[in-house]
Image 1 (tube, rainbow, N blue to C red):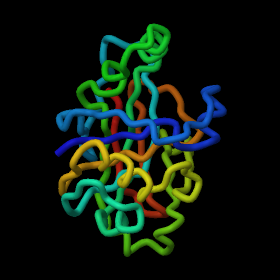
Image 2: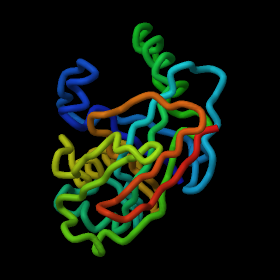
Image 3: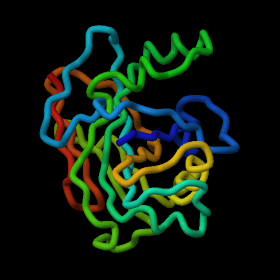
Image 4: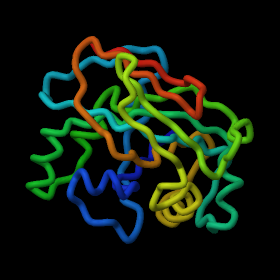
Length: 203
């Protein structure tokens, strides 16, 4: 199982970072042992003083494919959840300044919070999926899949040109605006529409 992540996929998030809109999906990878499952604790690492949350929709691939056509990509996934792309923001700034890869700030242990998956066909409108994050009961991020620059099918078709996608692979599809800093004793709760699918405590 591999974790494929998409950066810069919401216009409002690009505005808060001051980045231009990409012409094709911005892709990076996380190792499979980066997964932090629902109802587990996130341990603040000692290599960052600015640990941020980025809430995302996550799809799980249901079959293997290579060079998948966009019009066929919808048959390659049927489950979805909410995830957190934990990001060491201070380290990211340093890496970007040096034009170095992002792995150290994005792919460390526990950097991929992952909620409980539910079937997409259980959602009221699979073409416009709402999600949100609360921290200590206060709403911090909201987003809709219809606001993504590159949709699920675009991402699958694009990535499968370069690497084979396997059943069970995860795709983190990007974060909307509202990212922010984590503190010790925070409790993060992720919701897919009105259903709670994720809870993580920061220690």
